[in-house]
Length: 93
Image 1 (cartoon, rainbow, N blue to C red):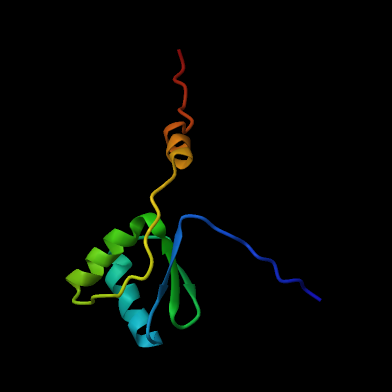
Image 2: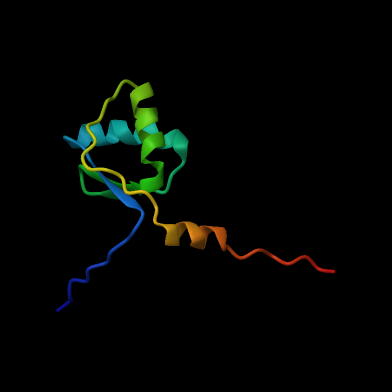
């Protein structure tokens, strides 16, 4: 018997649509952004949380005005420091 495994990911936002048709329209509207999106069933998408603003802007340009529930947390200082400390390739002398 397979065990259910809970996996927690940070930096993702869940987008829920009223029905499958609206989800398809949403996918078409945000396709030009070329994001890594994961579809979850007929009505839900997982999208990068840091791109929610650009997704909303694109949807509004298409005439869709989604309701946003919940505030997007700002990145913590620790996350910003990790981004600043990204490895840099050393040049050959």
